Image 1 (cartoon, rainbow, N blue to C red):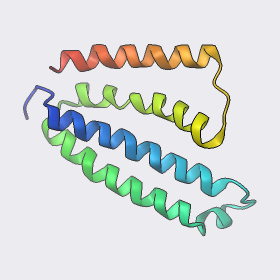
Image 2 (cartoon, helix red, strand yellow):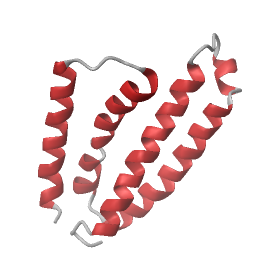
Image 3 (tube, rainbow, N blue to C red):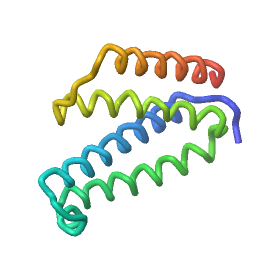
Image 4 (cartoon, helix red, strand yellow):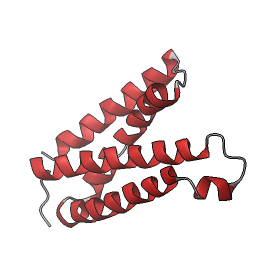
Length: 118
């Protein structure tokens, strides 16, 4: 295993973040207007979320082959930021100033971890 974070691996980590966001958006969409778990499971959005999960699993496995876990996993914390944005964009969820500040702090921490891998 190489210790450096290469551009292709960084791109693959960002792909993992995006597929994780896609998965959660699909799952949230599937639960809207569903009164039971069975109704949610029967919606196409649930199955799209499962496909996103499978894609992320394959990509994440490839990342872990080449990038130390201590570098790769903290970078995945950017998914917290993308979830805040996705909630606001797709579901019109409110984002308070405190919430936005927290997302910025997460981003700052991720940048510090990412810089150690370069």
